[in-house]
Image (spheres, rainbow, N blue to C red):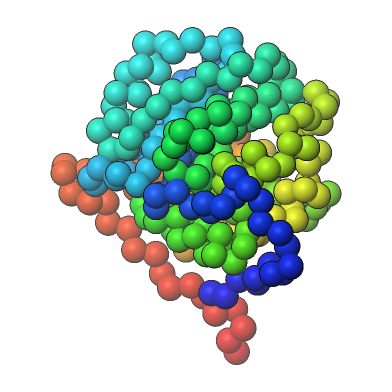
Length: 275
């Protein structure tokens, strides 16, 4: 696949001089007390899918300012440490409700990554921002998204995310370079009544590659296996599912049983132009 390359006349910015850290990315799982159980279930799934440890991935447990590290979170943190590097972050931004709580948790999470960037913490510049309502659709989802974002960066983009045609914007389940956040202070504040991905849509769109590997079907429910298997031919990740039908399917379909790798071979991509 060939990506459009951004104009060479665009000036480079200081903190972006290292566009990629060591290969890999940080998965930032954002949560608060109200969705902690679902977030921890997702974290365990991500860990359980992998047949062996991945040193190119850090799983960050990113909690809201008023959310403690509960026994459930600590147990999940240790469980996931078997397969990924792990860290825990608590946002200092004091936002609650919707969308203010989500806005401030996102901004507070990115602030923490930006604070540590000059010292090499995080080690990886790419951050995949997810919440409890997301779910992988394929066992190889990490490798697919890593390759997609590497192509995006090589083409001059700093963000990889799904394009939403209604009120055009990139959905907040996206991969973002930490240096991009540092270089764009205009996105560091969002009005409490506006969703951050929509409010900052023009700034984000200007530096985003519109991936087709992340599917956002807001508010979707009651997914069946016969629906999900064809979707997984084309997408690596689904977001905004509002019940547990997708993650229940993934736990059954993508996780290895009895020490064996889960058998999952998607059909080749269909050529819709063929006659």
